[in-house]
Image 1 (spheres, rainbow, N blue to C red):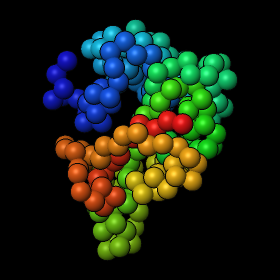
Image 2 (cartoon, rainbow, N blue to C red):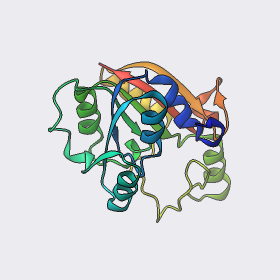
Image 3 (cartoon, rainbow, N blue to C red):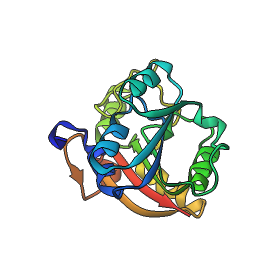
Length: 197
């Protein structure tokens, strides 16, 4: 696999998960991340996706994916049946945030959450100077086209975890091309977190 041709968030997640782990990807899209994990690390990965066209793309790649709405929960999966549950770029699109996070923490030993940081400096500047909803590489949709229902920042997510007694075991802060080390709530366009009970 040529990682230089792969999204940075995928490379970070790839580095987190151990070879041979059992993984559930919630909102897996067309399965690009699942394919990398299965081929390169021998990870047993399964996806859940609501978009039928994306499911067809997963099946074409030979991936195991189920049609489902993650807002409905993960009742088919026993407690701790996965080493990791991934919610990369899907948290901001769910309706029942508390329920979905609790279900992911129940079904998985650890949960990897990745989302766009709505407090990124580019978003702040566009909102302040133009007075309009921001358009950035991590927020590429106009307000009337966006699949995002939630607009959270890195600071918001840490506060959520603190209030709900969720341990943030690891965090990475990204732009499109590099990892950010300072003032992530201002300079990172997205964050990736490993959380657990």
